[in-house]
Length: 239
Image (cartoon, rainbow, N blue to C red; front, side, top):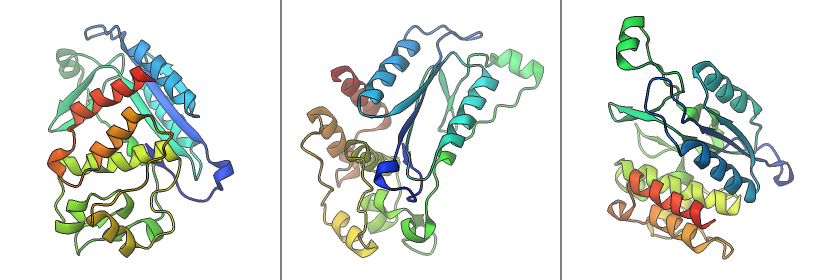
């Protein structure tokens, strides 16, 4: 999830989501759930005010077109979310999403395919003069989403990303910009002291628990990626 820019007023803000489900693979095992998962996610997001673009069983060209078209539709001030259900693979600790017509390994080698994956994060832009700072001579950070261990020690782990997701989930719950209008020094002291943003009382208790676990002060107390996926799936089922 990302918020692009700050140029629009609150009245002009939009919640946009791209949901992709792929289960009918040509060269891999068929999956029975992605289409249902995508439709469930579409319904859940629409219920909290998102305008959802939902597409199914995309081949490579169509998948690229859908991503580019969605990115081009984003305007300053929009809140943006991307969801994918389907086959994925991991290589060198990086996760990749597979389109319907991705060839198998033997066919890839025979035809000389080169797999290139672009980070969907390019859909997000930030105002570097107001949203980005440097914690030291080498580490550039976006303070509002930065975990306390990075602020204190300049030390990054995978659990630091989980903290950032906690802030993103807070954005989903409040549709607000975290720490909006506060100076960097105030934000830094607030986070290092173990304080956190107020979660609205209207937030479902199960989603509140996800947010609170994601941004705990001790990185070891935060869920890992796999556990977090399970927690989010439980939130969707409850919804």
